[in-house]
Image (cartoon, rainbow, N blue to C red; front, side, top):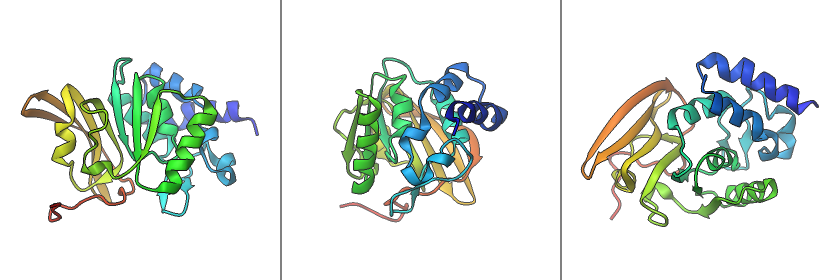
Length: 218
């Protein structure tokens, strides 16, 4: 299979038509080899619009257009210290790491922790740490962060995560329930103030253990 031609087609025919026009993002999608991060059985579909399952947990990879739209919204800077919640295959962490100072990606599924870690190591990504746990409860290790990315759906954004942003930091999340969820970018504008930008509507799988409003942790 000609992966380079398929990658060009992915960017030009899938991603760019959905108003992902940032050249840095398009170049990044061209340079980080997505096929190196998918399960072997799905390698031929790595650059297609197919939803690719990960392991036995029901997790899936985002489709390429979603990866492009999120990266465009994030505007990752070279000084950014990033927390990603939901490592999946490690591919999105690799994309973030190509722009950020470092990325800490936290995954609740132990099978995917190993899969992401092995993929990133094999691909030679050295500025990503993969850890196991439920970071929707907050993740103090490395906080405060310049950027927090919740790589899956949540019913609401936990306040503890907003508090783990630096002032000026950003948090990206897919909030709501299928069939319509909102992609939100929350910026911490002061010690106790936040600004929320509604970017676009979509639907993505919920993160495992995503809390509901009526659930309390004691």
